[in-house]
Length: 140
Image (tube, rainbow, N blue to C red; front, side, top):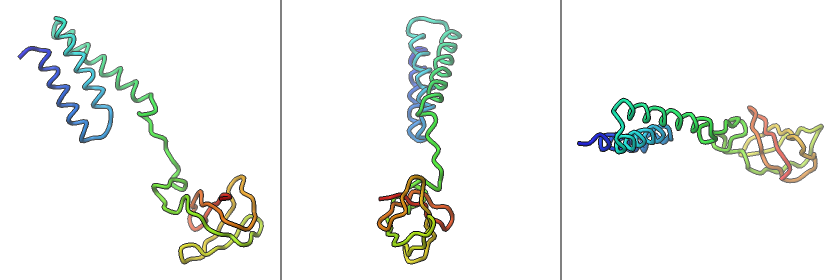
């Protein structure tokens, strides 16, 4: 089997393994192996093929890590809809007392506070954050 075929087979194995991990890092290493296959096809020696594969894989991995795909945004759990099902839900507040209120929400009494920029008027509000037993709300 020719050297370039071995490089491509190894790249294919990494691509299949990447399907199980869900990250792009193994794809970047597979890209490096593909460039190693290209170097072999162009007639480079085995040490040069290895250097090309390593350099391309490392550079591609570094570029991925610096991109926005490499660093997913970190959300505060108190504001993350995926962590707390109450975020984004609406509730009605009848009266406010210095930016605080007590309301019945999901069958229990909750302390409610106004979030930044919210106006203390009676009406519907949207939950933007949950801090312990306090709901932080914004105008709906």
